[in-house]
Length: 326
Image 1 (tube, rainbow, N blue to C red):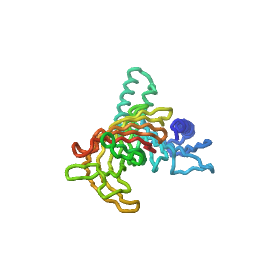
Image 2 (cartoon, rainbow, N blue to C red):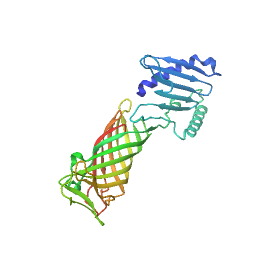
Image 3 (cartoon, rainbow, N blue to C red):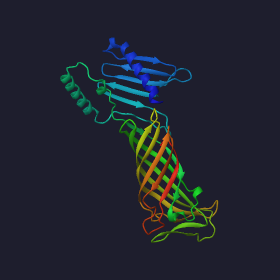
Image 4 (cartoon, helix red, strand yellow):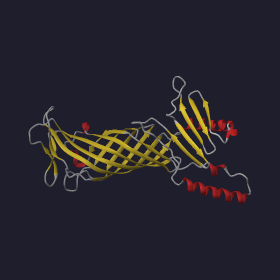
C-alpha cells in the first residue's frame, strides 16, 4: 500500500480515537475505526500508542496477524513497519535509527535551551517532527538477462542463447534524505554462455583456449560461471511515493563455481573440458538499474577481465536484462 494513502488514515485514527480515550489513561484501551477499504485498530496505554492498519476482504473482515502498516508511538520516538507482498514474500521494514535515544536526548536539551532563551511555553513543531533514520530490508528477487563476452571473447559466441540468471538474497536500504538512499545487497549470479561453429573452451596446464572440438561435431558447448555478488548502489527515489528508482554503483563478485562442457548428442552425456579455466577469482564491476513498483531493467559491466592476464582471451562480461523485486 502506498504511504500517502496509509498515513492520513493513521493520523486521523490516532487523533480521533486518542481524544475519545483520554479519560482512561491508566488503562489499556482498544478502539477501531472502519473506512470503506481499511480497518484501523488503535491500542493505547499510559506508555505508548500502537496503531495497525488492515485491508478488508470481500466479506468486510480482516486478518488480525496480517497488517498493512503498524506504528508504535512512544515519548519522543516512532517505530513503524510497512508490509508489502513482494517476490518470494519480501518484507519492507522502516525502523528507528540505532542511535535514536542519543538523538532524542540531544533534541530535548536543545528544546529546553530554546525554551529558556526565548521564554516560550511551546517549541517549534519542526523540532519534534523530524523523521528518524529510515532502514529497509527486502528478501528475494530475480533477474534475467544477456551474458555477453566482449573483445576477444566475441569469437564463436552464440549471443542469443548466452544468458544470466540472478537470485537476490538480501537487499538493505538506508535513507540519506527524502529522495536519496544507499543500498548494499547480496545475490547469486549464474552465467550460461554458449558457443557455436563446433568450438569450445579447453583448459590446458598453463592457459585456456577456444578451439574446434576434437571429437567431431558436438550438439552444444557451454561455459558456466557462478558468482556471489555484492553490489552497493546509490539510489534516487522519484514520484509521489518514491516507487520510481534510479540506481548506480560498484559491485564486487567472488567466483564460486565454473566449468566448460560439451554435449556430443541431444540425449548424450556431457564431456567436461575444464573447471578453473584460469578465471579471475574476484571481479570488480559497475551496475546501473531503473525500476518502478518492483519491476525494472539493469545493466552491468565487469571492469576486471574474465580471464587472468595472459591465461585466456582478453574479454569483459556485459549483461543487460530485467529484474523483479530487486
